[in-house]
Length: 149
Image (cartoon, rainbow, N blue to C red; front, side, top):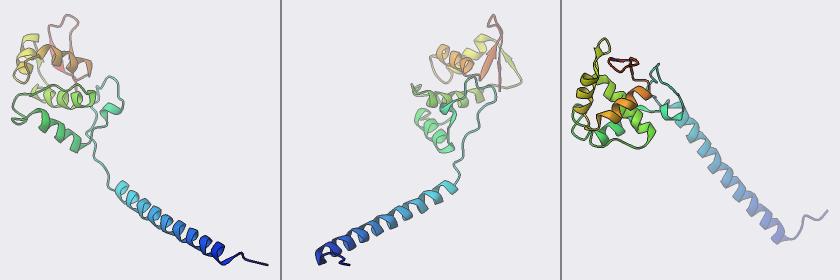
């Protein structure tokens, strides 16, 4: 039984060596990805009154810090520089904003506006988002507001 010409055998051996190199690289990559997955990513907990939980709520602690630093350039007690357009970033800002309210107190609309306006001039938009995302709630006539968390 003939194994083929010398050049054919050499070509097969070369191909096998290349496949062996690719397999080693693949195994190394798999090991790295498994090690990375062992390090658990810490997520910010979702507030229990969230209205519609989806991928927007998958916020890591690192993401949370980055967004807050980017939008509160003078520090977390300072004003909000810009209100983000992306929903995930909005959630991070709103989560921080709701900490400015006392959870055991009922607020009038004027008091809510004052708290929000100290952070950002467009208090109407932020108030609407706080209610829409389930951070605040209000009576039907809008006379009283409270933290829903």
